[in-house]
Image 1 (spheres, rainbow, N blue to C red):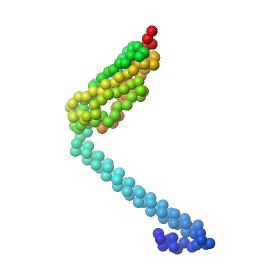
Image 2: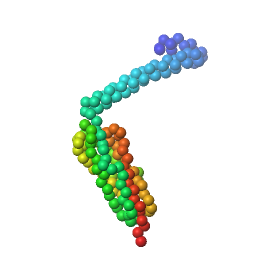
Image 3: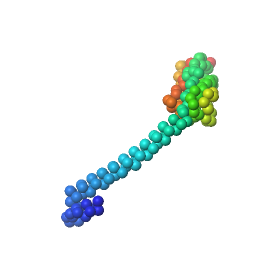
Image 4: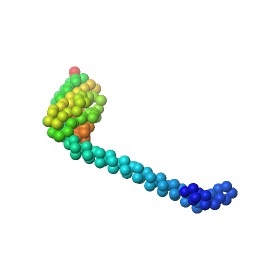
Length: 163
């Protein structure tokens, strides 16, 4: 590459356009080849390690007894809760990484501890009807290490204004 640079002719202190283009193309080609090799190798190692881990350790399977709950009619300002039950039907520990609600009026609570195969767990969902009225439908998205990694639970309530 240095030879290519030296071979370029200079005219009044500036490289010719052809020399400059060859120089830039060689830098781009070298950069593209080296980046592709590094990223590809790292990506393959990660995939192989992940596949190996799943094969050796199995995989968790999360099964909910119900994925929705209707609170029916509640008064505005009332807080209600429901506990969703699930169990791990897989052959590896189940880890719930997060549980996030579609609204700040809905708060999920769950255990951060790994759940062994065959064991049961719960997620409590609290809904606050303050400042709400009419039919309300809220989602709680569960992210775990199971396949599929996302599961959506749903709660509904008809909020009636208190007199």
